[in-house]
Length: 421
Image 1 (cartoon, helix red, strand yellow):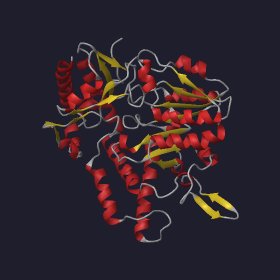
Image 2: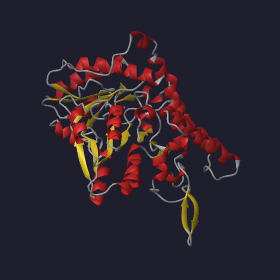
Image 3: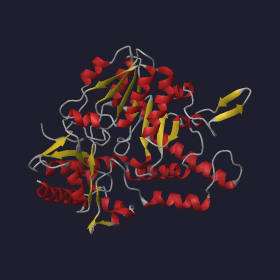
């Protein structure tokens, strides 16, 4: 089977994509590494940040640094307005029904843990089953394992085929009246596989189960519509969508969020606190946002999403498909190189191993040539073990990467392979 990627964009859609102008927004792309121009291909771990987002921090801390919501002074009002404006922008970005369904977290990992510790702890019991896939990041495996050890429910794993695509027939067969939750990523960080989450959601709901979608690797590359997917929960991270680290989002259906108990206690998430009468809790979303949040980071996330929408999320995805096709074709001719992940539908991730060469050696040496890729297990050890490897090299693409950078990467890879063999 030939290596395959997401649908090839039209010539017109590529022709209007001005990557060189776009790159001017990213000051870090002007630096050198080891005397070579930086070629940054580690975007699945963390994307770079445009100047417009960087400026948010200076603006916030120099003009209206204040705690949000309960303050009555001007700075608090301005900070609150900017913070809540991001909530409304995220609502539109995901096509959620209501801004109250948007919970700010530290990232996808915390969002999944919130669901596990709030919904899962109150709903899952011995005899229940949670389905996860072989493709999952550890952040969508370990929280369920920890809870299963305590609550006694069973975790079942949806297998993948030789190309890294989910085995949908196996998924159908795993679903039963015991299934309470399906927790699956939208896009695999290790392979780039795009999962059919809308179909998976419909099948889960037919069996009375909920679905949680880890969208950390989907939101940078494609439009996400949580209503169309009919996701019960959807999570993503700011640092994958050209925003800051330390901030993310959990979307949840309103009825579920309202019924779920708080996870963390403290300020902001209460209505009243009394030693005699106990505590009553705030309405959503504040019930799940205890303490002072990452205010500047949330505001910066809103600016990052605005930047993405200005470029066009679909245009970004189409350009990344061009980069992935070009890179896949270029490395396919390298002797001894094996691509992991050749599913029919992929995002901009190229994961590979080279016979006779350790992935870590390749990563260290290619960095000396100015090229940043990621090596290791990518927090997906069960998946890599399934394919018989301990680590891979992973090049991942973003809006600002160019075809010339792909060629530089391939040339550097060929040179490094010649050194380590």
